[in-house]
Length: 553
Figure (cartoon, rainbow, N blue to C red):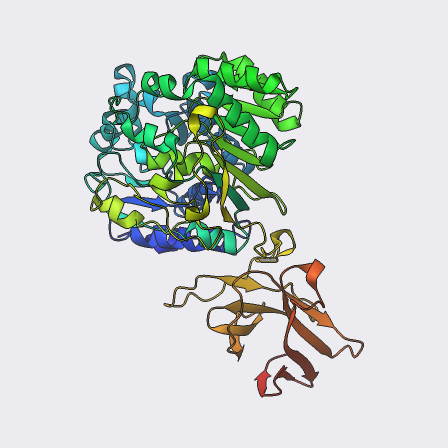
């Protein structure tokens, strides 16, 4: 019997939480066949499952087994993203999708495919002949659709992994009919606190506004249970409300690069006209935009030639542009998935970026703020009723009750600051040394599950590193991988560890700090010193207690 734990390799290019996720997934495959893994937008799902594919490939080569692997997505952007990630790993693969016919190669054991192509009746023989051993489903909250369920019918013996930021369904029926197990990652709040996602400022309308009352009065829904575009257009595609869209942008995000989510193509064009009248460079994209035009607009946006793109559900999934500085919600939704996916486009880390979220339709009053702790596991099992927050939570910002009621008929409904994470001290992870490139270190796997691990760069001729986790600070021998506890100390779970060599070449100072720019400032914390004494490393903590560690120096 295969032990899937043996597949998992230390990948020095992964972040610590991605490596931990990989270990959990391989371990869970020993017990079940079908796993759903939840991971917030912008934290590297594609990167994670590409590393998993690499590990499967390597194990197969070592055991003379050629595993067939299928990656499934429902949008051309996601398919292209997966293919690019495989290329970066130098993993040969073919693509089965109408938009990438030039990469079709059925001789490859690894295939990236659109769900529409692979399950089309004309390809029935193809999928049955290939008999994939592993299937990875991107944006797996769609996997309950009939087209996806054909994969379970055609490939009943394959190991399946679904990845999604939002395991939630509009009808609250859950995912247990197709997935056997659910694995969560950290929350958005934790990712922001540790510096892996960008902090943000969230502006919206008061919870007692006429706009929110108008949304709640809509009774026309589409087949999926969301608001019909025609009903939304009647309420929101007016010159006064479009003026408010621009006013909130001009007041809080003028000159910044961003995305606006609109109701329809016509609504997008009206928004563009409103913004262009103020000399803003803005373009719109929807499902009918020709592929070449869409590519040209996106490239111009990424290069800075265009300030804003208005779109209709195009950039909810599979769009990566880390330097997005603001998100504007101009379309109400009943879908928690759409809300989280849309605001998540602005939270991808890019240096010390702080994102502005302009919620002009009050979605926080239904779903809560982006960093709220959500019970995704209950959604996975289908235990939750309709997700709806009657009133906003207490956010430790300006009280919503203090906001004066504004008359919507006058077109001046005031946007207020709902949540401000802009002053949150976030670790600068470009200076973080979670792993040393090209120098893998295989730490022993303990039963305890750590929520964070931070390591210093190697020191003393590359023989040692300092590691911090929730148990305390350790010294690690990089040759033998022996770890010994230096000190139990509660500190922040982000930042970096610097080992500074003093003038005495046999003395090192260990410092915990937010980033190299805050080294030796008030926010730095001296953990202790290490002094080489023959074959003995003597650690002296900052409070003068001593621990001796015997190593080969």
